[in-house]
Amino acid sequence: MLYAVIIEKAGANFSAYVPDLPGCIAAGATVADVTIEIRDAIRFHIEGLHAEGLEVPEPITLAKYVQA
Image (cartoon, rainbow, N blue to C red):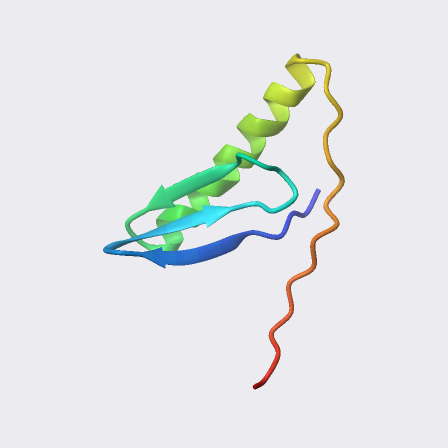
C-alpha cells in the first residue's frame, strides 16, 4: 500500500505522520532518517492492527502542491 506521509521541520529535527493511520508517527535528525523511521512505523502499525484483528485503513489521503 502507498500511504501519504507528512514530513515537517520540528526544531532541530524532522517529524512525520500518516494521516490515514492515526497515531503512526516518527522522528529523525534528517529527512532521510525520518523517511526510514516512518516506513518502519507504518509496517509496525499495520502489523499491530493485524495482531488485534482490526481493519487496516485504505490509503485515501492525497497530497498536492498548490502554487499560491
